[in-house]
Amino acid sequence: MDQPTRLDLKKDRGLSVEWADGGTSYFSILYLRKMSPSADMRQLRDEMKKNRLTVLPSTPSGNSAAALVALDAELVGNYAIKIRFSDGHDTGIYSWAYLREIDPMAEKPTKSPAPPGPLS
Image (cartoon, rainbow, N blue to C red):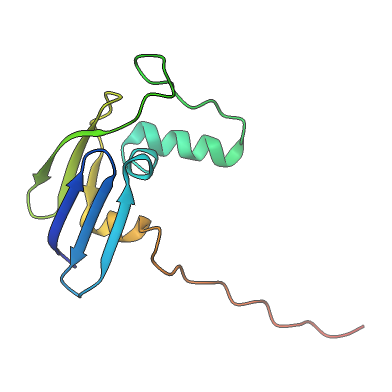
């Protein structure tokens, strides 16, 4: 499994990760919160796929304009990082494999177009 060699969390901006294979990743705080691997966020993302009008939860202060920040983070064993956000969310554990999976800059495999069928 790929391990990070360096983590740099800017609480008001995002998380930079340098990987053992020489690659780097960057995740904004908003993106990390949206992609939290917690059960409630997975369910919300599934609902949003089915219904684009799904209402997102508001911040505890009720002020959606309030800037979301990471309050703190801690390593979980040798395999993950847990981040506590200013909106109270702190149940997501971001494994190194999950961070690689959701890396917004990573090239995603593209589907090959289906071969053309017979002409009629």
